[in-house]
Image (tube, helix red, strand yellow):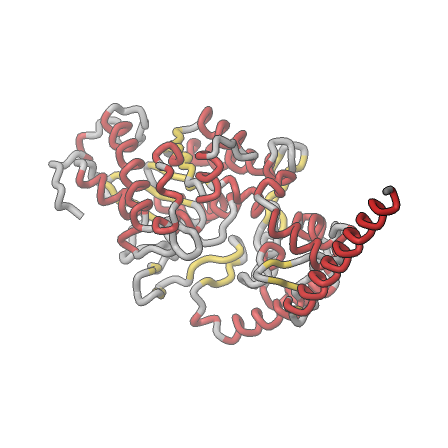
Length: 417
């Protein structure tokens, strides 16, 4: 009997081994290897990770050759920014002469009878995948005027920005426009962008740029790669990345290229790891005592402090991703909850996730790249408008230019736009 059981067990083990070998062979044949030797399967990039030197060189050559037509251009102090006086998506995504998403220009000095609001953040603030009139910043402006508060909203959001870049954009450009209120579109998921220097390390198919990167030195913020290396120099950096002075500041080089798993020789194991991995796999970036967590809190603190020091109201607005909402409706807290709690305790804070219903995770409410669709941007605009209207009328915002808010008040007109 024992021999029979042993024989059956051996048959099962052999069958399993054969199945695994067949699956491994299938993945190796069905996957793709790019010019840099990086293997991908079904959209997943598998370990071991390879620096995209050749891919980067092609993208930089294309950028240099067609720079005058580029939608996003390199910026030595911000990493990248929108091309001024530019429009794309059939003219529905418009950038003015100052690089803001707007169909008009703004004077440096706000009008004495108009509340000026400036918003900063990434693509969820810029409003990617919706038309100019559908961005939540534009919806905020429309709804405030309809509610009887004369206001204008300047959109400084830029796609793929980290928290540090949003802060730098405020310092280098935003403050010149003297806003009364600054709204920071807070995306805690961007903690992983804060510890990034070279965009290609996060997204090999992304923009061929580097960016300034904050770091903590004895609890003080220091800035590295400022000015940022020009795109033309990046291929040489990637060819000998380990020996470049910026390598220690690139978290995604240390955590990916240097620390591939021992089992990365197996395509099957690599595929299963990538397919089953969730955002919780980045907890070494998101947790409060991690480099990403401490740096994100320090950037938020510095941003708020700088804004408030200029007698400007600072509002932290959490713009949840779809993945955050799914976790919320499952009753799970995200690993970066500490940052949301900190923002809530120290600043004017709007938790947009509290206004979403379970239906809002349906695909129909999101763009193809999972940015907010028009229904959600309208909801954000309305929620923020309600909060600002309240704080203007009850004076809780403490607006320096409008201790008496009467110059801002207009007769409510539902048709005003």
